[in-house]
Length: 137
Image 1 (cartoon, rainbow, N blue to C red):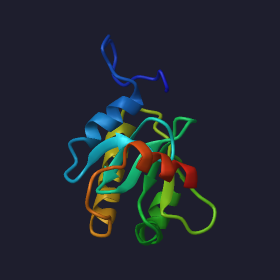
Image 2 (cartoon, one colour):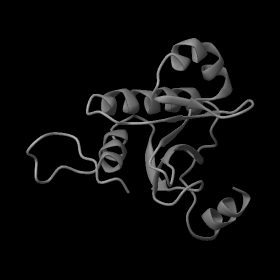
Image 3 (cartoon, one colour):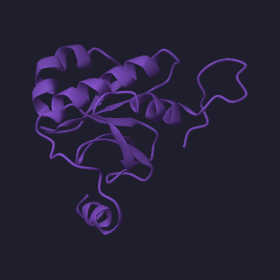
């Protein structure tokens, strides 16, 4: 986990990843659970994971192919955004400045909106169900 922190002079500031996850808890429809794609907490909509931090500290966001296609020009102009090769539901974003926090949480909110209508209702997987998913990723 990154030790980079948001804010100045705050002895109890949380690392960026924790701040993003905590702020995402406030997004309607979100449940925080253990990640299937990377270790640590992830943002879930029903039984679908929509955001997590990868081992390098970048935030992977499942915007969906449709949203990425419609917003590609906007996203491509932003140096904080990386696309996966080929068609993918996911983008990677890099949070480097305090102001990036609001932007990152807004993108996760967009991912929730894009996925909520098609995600299987329910809770994030745990235990054996989570381990089964991890084997496929």
